[in-house]
Amino acid sequence: MPSQEPLLRIIPEYLSDDVLFRHVYPAMTRTYYWSDLWESGFYVALARAGFISVCAEFPDAGFLLLPQIHDRCAVLDWKDRRVPKSLRGPLSPGRLAGEGLSLRITQDIEAVLEGLEASWGGESWLHPPYKKLMRNLAESGSASGDRPGSDLSLFAVELHARDCDKPVAGELGYVIGSTWTSLSGFMHPDRRRWNNMGKVQLHCLGALLESAGFAFWNLGQCQMQYKLDLGARILDRSDFLSRWLAERDRDPPRLFLGLKDRIIPCAELMRSE
Image (cartoon, rainbow, N blue to C red; front, top):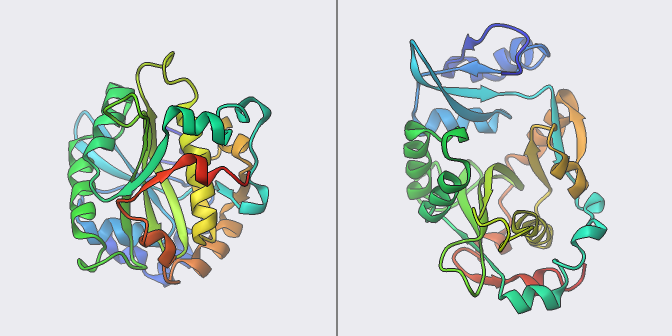
C-alpha cells in the first residue's frame, strides 16, 4: 500500500478546518488513514474534505475504511479532454448507434455492484461493509436524506448495449457540488465481445459531465494510464485542494440531476466529438 508512514486513525474531530489545514493537508508523506467508523455522515465529511475512501481487510482488525488524501491527483478539465486515435472508430456515432449503446445514471446501484464483483472478484476493495455503506448512501439520495444536493450524492453509471441484458461497463461515482468523483469501474467479463467498452463508458460519461456543466472530473490516483489518455492532468495536493474546496459547496448541475434514470443514447453524446 503506497504510504510512506504508518497508518494513523482518523476520527470526525480531525475533519475540522483547523486540524485539516494545520496538520492533515501539509503532511505530504501521509496519504492513507484508517477508521472503523462506517457511518454515512463520516464518509460524506471525508469526501467533502478531499479524501477518497476505499476498504481493506486486516488479519487482526477485520475490514477497515481507508481514507486517502492523495499527494498527487488526476483531474480532467474539459478543455483537455481528448479521444485517442485508437478509439475514434469505437466512439463514432455510427458505431455507437449500431451497437445500441446508451448510458443510464441511477441511484439503483445493484447492477453496477454486480458488475464490479464479476469483473474484479477478489481484487475488489468493495468489501461487504463498504457495499453496505454505498447502499445506504444511494438509498438516502443525499446526505440530507431528501434529494441530491451539495453534500454528496452517490450514483451508478451503466453502459448498456442492445445485445446484452446486463451493463457491459459502468462505475460508481459521486457528486459533490459541481464535481464528479469516480470510485471504481468495470467492464463485462467477456472481453472479446465487449472490447473497449470500459473506455467507451469513460468517454461517454466525460461528454455527459461536460455538457451537464460540471466544473471538473476528480479521477483520484494518478498512476493509471487510461486517466492520462483521457487528458487528465496531475495536480499536487495543494493545487487540487484549492480547486476542490472552491467547487464543493456549489449547487450540483441541474441538467445532470434531470438525467437521473433516463436512457441516454451514446451516439448523441459523442456526435460533436
